[in-house]
Each structure stands twice: as C-alpha cells, then as structure tokens.
Length: 245
Figure (cartoon, rainbow, N blue to C red):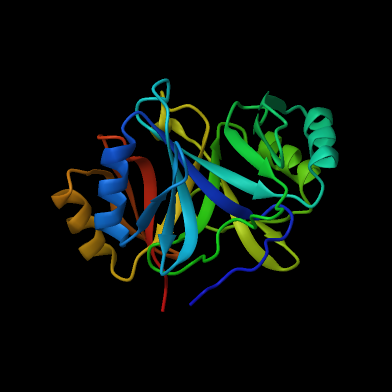
C-alpha cells in the first residue's frame, strides 16, 4: 500500500473533479475504482480503503466535459504565489485558506495547496489512486521555465519520439510536461490526472461497460501501459495507467 503522510513542494497532492453531474460521477468512479464517496456538505470526498484520494464537487457552471484539477503542494503558499506572478502565471481564484487556483502562461489551470490539518491524498500510486499528473502545453521551453521557477524541480527529457520532460523533487519523479503537437489541434493546454489500475485492459473494458469512451486506446510507455478515458456523464477526461512490473 502506497500510503502518504506528506507531499514535497511541487508534488501532486490532491485532485478535484468539478462536474455538472456529481451523482453520475460518483457512481462511475465507485464502480470503476471501488471508491467510497462521503458527503462533506455540498461536495464529496472519495476514499479508497478508508484513505482520502480525491474530491468530487458539483458545479452547474463546470466545463463540459468535466475537468480534473491537480493540486500541487507547497510549504509556503504566499511565497509560491509571489513566484507564480513573477514567472508569468495568474491567480484565477483565491488565495483562500490554504490554496489558490492558478494558470500557467499557456492557460493550463492547476491549484497550489499548502497542506494544513488536511494533508491531501492519503494514498498514491496503487490501484484506484492518483499516480501521476502532467501538463500538456504548446511550448515546452516556456512551461519548463515557468514551473522550474515555481517549484524546486529537476527536469529531465525522456528520449523517444515525443517532447516530454519529467519533473523530479529530491530525486523522486513527481509529474511531467508534454509538448502538444499537431495531433492536439483544438485542445487547450491542460493538466491530465493519471489513476493506477492493476490491469489496464480489464479497467478499460469496465470503463466501457460504465458508459465511458476511450479516445486513446491502451499503449505502452516507459512508465507502463496507458489509456485515456472520457466519461461523458460528469466523469471527465483522465488517464489510466498499469505500472510496469
């Protein structure tokens, strides 16, 4: 079990789904991952084996399709927001108590969170839990400069046919950056959330049974087998990953 008690600066520490149909989203993710969704008074906290993994929040003004927001940890929110402004980012909402919603120079939205009484995800990188996040942007150099100024990332290019950089903190890979090419025409810059599964083919089949579409079919990567899933009834876009053994 990959329990988490804390998250280093720059690491994805929480995920929130804003959706017009929270009831359908809860039904979908509960059936796909075995989540238990507990009402928090207007929104739900999803648990896996009793540990918090994500939030599902109803919002009649949410984007369609629904969008997952990644929360990146910081030990000092005000200092992080000062760096955000200096590096060319924008604050969209907040700062509120412990967090702010922001965007990078390309417009990709994310949240910055300073853990307090609530530490964020209590489990990562096991079936049903968030395991990775990456920002998909039209200019990799601009994104690398921005996020490198915002967080203490060490960056390394991944060899191969795509422009991909892995961002690491204290020697641990925590998230990534993908350069969008011509195949992404019409798709705005965004952060993508990954959830791990024990078997990708079975998970994709199950997602299909639950009404999801699979715009990117399973493929092999240096970090395991991956597929992109879209659940139209409030579940949004996300990626599934079967880690390498």
